[in-house]
Image (tube, rainbow over the protein chains, first blue to last red):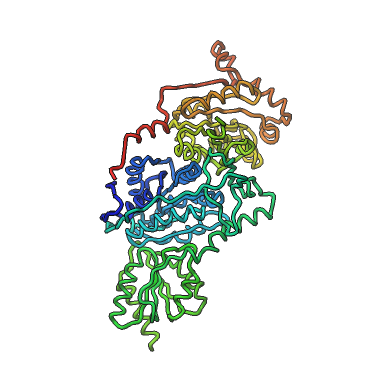
Length: 385
Length: 236
């Protein structure tokens, strides 16, 4: 635990540790959290590493305090992060909505475990993917990235800090117990620079005045002469509350959503294999992506024209890209560690043009490659008949 | 130096949470009950920053009670000004954790069956190192104490008993006249120094006001944290 990881090296580390190293490489200097399985190693490694780089680790009294402290630190001038799992992420939700409305760049890591309630603390799940998008009240949008390996845990965490700053939005890493607790090779690239936090120009500064792309120009910090009024109620461009002004409120709500959804094409991060002639495509994300790729390779061995899509940016959902990639296939199989959640997004994307099969797995176990292969074979038989 | 370069204000939710919004200093107006954690993030990201929280009795001692005791326990250098009107005023007059026993409110129509918190006693017990109580009938004394609390390095807590003609005055005391409520605040309180020479009978029903507790010995959290980590360094 807490071994130091230097840039330009290859280490065998846990997914949870990879997240910490990536956060520090990205310039994260503030973490507030609360112990919870299976995310505690993130807090432990942050406690070890942050003070070494002049950063702040706080173990707060609860999960709500943790996300609130992270937002406070973000406006205080530090790149900030919090991490938890199921029950803790539920508690953080009012903070997520606040961060969205005051456009605070923060990174939230959810090492997903089985739920609901205390659920399966030491077993993986992907049951929180809709919570990440819809968990807080009101209309808002976030960005969520899903790693399927320790290397992706590193790469996507670094990217999460880039996106949080650029879009001034809370960014989720939706990891899971498998990625979190797996130890495997992680290449820490050399020459990674801390993510830049762009300062807005001070002249005539209006803290919530966006450009034509809906994005705010940089991120101010307190006590630097910006005259900040950061207001959790819906507000005008100066930060003054506007709950009595329907047009101002409507405009802000729309901008908070569209600044993300309008950039979905730029945010898409998808990996594909064997797609060129694929008739049956496995669409996966997070841990099930690994047995999915194995199953697709095994299907190819059996001369089944199977293909593979791994979605790394799950929110905003890359619907255009999925529709485009799936156009040539006749069946999509969606394995996920829940009752069948993302399959509905996939169905929406392909709008009835392609058959979409849900392959849920509950109980805290990962799909085996054989289970996914069996479904591929079943569908292959159905179509050749 | 301009105080705007040094001071950050945080407002909770409730009538009193709006106070900083009208002050021309960088302000974070946050979620109900969570002002102290937000303030802790602001403080820890720059320990030279002075952070002042404006909160109400429901915000601070009800929904935010856990954050309040842990902020005090850490002795983090934040000044918490709790505006105490004994009721949830902005939501229309519901019973608070500070409403007097038997007090009638919209959600205690037969009289409050509970016993109220004493915010100052709670702050001191939890580890706050500067604790004071005044009323809105003591503006000069209160201003002086606020200045002392901001100068104090540690968790400082000032409870301000206020008239609330709109809600508490009317529903708990049957009095809607602000001036009369101010007179009641004066009559019901006694300065902690004056109280030293009074008998128990004379003090019955009186609330102590003044600077109640002050400790400069206990380590302040933020500066101590930075002092500690300054000795560490990453080996790569």
